[in-house]
Length: 268
DNA sequence: ATTGAGACCTGTCGGC
DNA sequence: TGCCGACAGGTCTCAA
Image (cartoon, rainbow, N blue to C red):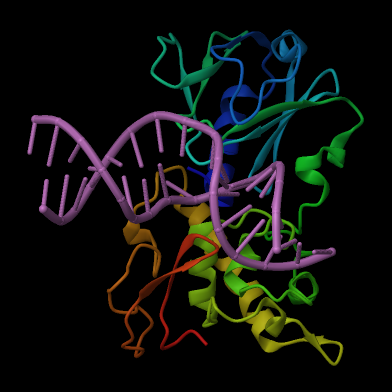
């Protein structure tokens, strides 16, 4: 599923089902996802109460009464299902039985997901979080932050946006969408939006606003799986650009091995 | 230190 | 119908 908006939707749904409840039992139906589950994974979680559920970039963080944090990444195909009974489906890998009778099941066909336990006190030292960039919906994420993160990067702007050290939570869809809204070419060098004479370039201001707008509107769309009609350029190769008066045609190109969608006419 | 290529997995879809 | 390649919302690691 998951870029920032989808992970946020999952967080909200899990929060309703899990906050304040106790994990009675954890069933691992295999030994690994992307990596092996850590030693004693299930037993560290059992009997812990879930105090709060947070999100950082594309990661979910469940704060437990022990002080440990359960760290979860959905990878490419991870999802959660909440039900009362719990007959297993294909690719159900982790089952959380809660004290209130609910069963929360993690399903992930491609197994690019990740679960780990961060021991109490080690908060943001986990290597997945250590070098993560700014949280784009925080007030502190602004043109200065983005310009600084892009400084001296010779890589394409779109590729830079996918780098979680530059901004946390953008993925292949919303990187393309944000660039279209900002009217910026995905092929520009990232450093071309960086600071000049102590001030971020205008492009950095536009891109910062576009990132926030794209993510906010996707979150507002809420908890429903997205459809291609939700996007202005993503998966619209050959279609007419939706920008009023543009008249260009959306193109698909490859960057760093991944598809980028953009309008060559209005994105410079 | 950056950067690109390939690897990790399974499922789906379109073409022949 | 079946087979085959291309592609999919994400990281990681390795080599240049």
